[in-house]
Picture 1 (cartoon, rainbow, N blue to C red):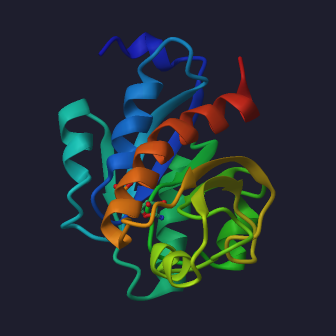
Picture 2 (cartoon, rainbow, N blue to C red):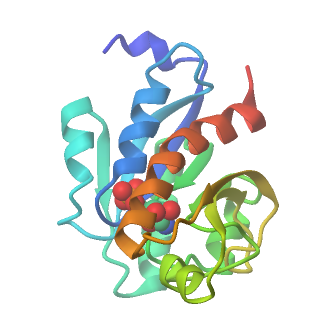
Picture 3 (tube, helix red, strand yellow):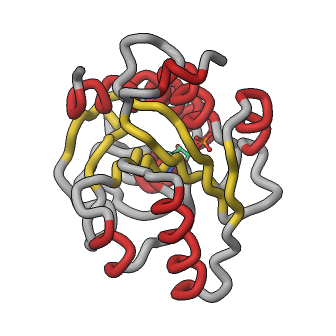
Length: 193
Ligand code: GRF
C-alpha cells in the first residue's frame, strides 16, 4: 500500500481476541480515502487469534500480549502504543477487561463494539440472554470505553429484529453483519475529516 495514504490520519490500534471479522471490516474502511483512521497496529491477547491473518495480508504490525500478568502486560502494551504513536484504540472482539489505569492513559480515545442494544445486556452471552427474555429486537452498539464495563457514552446503535425462528447462531450472524457497517459509521461520526 502507498505509505503516504496514512500520513494525516488518526493512528489507530485495533485490539482483537478471535475471528477478527470486525478488524477485517475496519481495515477495508481504513483503506478508503474517506476514512479518518489509519490502522497502524493490531494487538491480540491470543497468538492463535484467527483475525491475525488480516494483519499479515494487509502488512500491518502486530503485538501479542498474553495478559497473564495484567499489570505487566498492560505496561508493556502502553509502551508499545506510545512507541507507535497510537492516538485511538478500537476494541473489536477483545475479550480482556482493561484496567482503570490503562483506560486513563487513553481517556476518551478507546472505542468498543458490543453485540447488544446497550444499556441492555452488558457483558457476555448477549444473544442467549436476549432470546431467553423474548426480546423483539436486539442489535449492536459502538461506544466510548470508560472504567465501567460497557457503560461509556453511546456513539451509534443499530437495531436488529429477532424472528421466532432465530437461535443464538442466526442472531449472532445477523448482528455481526450490522457490526461491520456500524463501526466505520461510528468512527466517521466521531472523527469526520
Ligand atoms: C462481535 O460480536 C463483537 O461485538 C463481540 O465479539 C464479536 C467479535 O467478532 N464483542 P469478530 O472477532 O470481530 O469477528
